[in-house]
Image 1 (cartoon, rainbow, N blue to C red):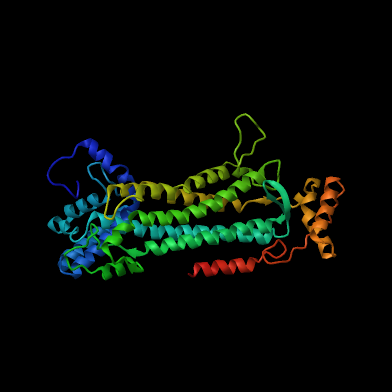
Image 2: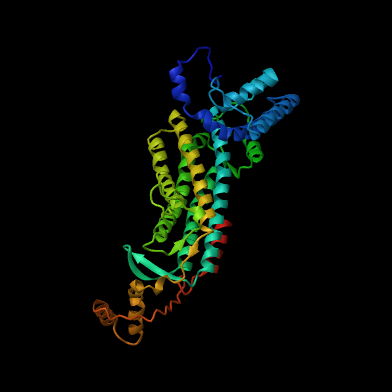
Length: 428
C-alpha cells in the first residue's frame, strides 16, 4: 500500500531503491506517528471534519495500534511503503470509510516531521540523563581522588603536576559545554510542524494551536515553509550536540587506554571489564574504551554527513531528506550505548596512589621550584636558567610539595562551583 497510489504499479526496482531502510527505521518512529495521528484526529474532530463518533473510534483504534507497537506486535510488511501507509491501512481495515479521513489536511511530509521532532525530544532527554549520570560519576571520583597526584602532559611529554581530582573534574566540566549545545538542539526540536502539510499549508481551517498543546510542544513552527525546512536542520543541530559529547568521551577513552598501559600504570580496572589475546596470556585489553573511542570518532563525522546531504537543497521537500533518518537514528543509539558503557565502566576504575614517587617524574616539579625562586626575589629568567642547569646536570632534587591555590588548580578544584555551574546549565 502506498499513500500516493494512483492505480498503477511502480517497478519493483524503483520500490526497493526509494523505500530504502525506511521500514526498519520506521519501527523506531511508529509510536510517535501514532501520537501525531491521535492529535491530528482530535483536531479534525474539533473543526468538524470528523463527527463525534468517528473521532472517538479513530482515536480508540490509533491507541490500540499504539499498544501493539509498545508490545512489539507491530510490523511493516514489504507491501507497505512505510509506517504511515501501514497505520492508515489498519485504520481503514478497522473503520472503513472513516479510516480514510485520517490524512485530511496533512501530508506525509509534516507527518514524518512530527514523528521525528517527538522522537528527538525523547532521545535528547535520554542523552541529557545519561550525560548527567556520567557527570555525577566523574565528580564523585574527583572528590574521592582529589589529592592523588599524577603527571600532566603537553606534547605527550611529562609537564607539570596534575591530580586525579583535576583530571576527573576536567571531563565533568567539559560535559557542561556539551550539554549547552544539546539543550539548544532541544529548543529547536520543541516546535510543532504539524499543519505545514507538504510545506505550503492547507485550505482546511485547521487548529495548529490545539495540536501544539496536545503534542506537548513548547511552541509552534508558524511559517509552513520554515516548518518543512526544519527537516535536516533539526537533525544537524542534534548531531552537533551529540558530536560534542562524543568528542569529550572519546578523549576520556583515549586517556584511559593510555593510562591503563604498563608504561603508565596510572589506573586499572577489574579483569571482568577487560579482554584477552588469543596468543598472549598476559594481555588485559581495554577493548571497551577503544570501541567507545572509535564509535565516538565516527559520531563526530555525523554533522558533516548531514550537511553534505542538505547543504545545496532549495526550500521545499526533497527525497534526499529521507537519508537523514538513516544517519541520525543509528547515531543516537550509538551515543547512548557509549555513554552507558562509559558510566558502567569508569565507576569501577582503580587509581594508583603512588605514581609520582617514581624518579622519572621528578622533573615535573621544576616549575614549582622555579616559582619558589621567583618568590624569593630572583628574576624569572634567571631562576629558569638556574633550574634548567640543575636538570641538565642531573642535580635537580625537587621538594615534591605542591602548593597550587588559585581557582581551578589542583589545590583548589572548585568542585562546588562546577556543580553549581552544572545546575545552572540544566535550569536554562
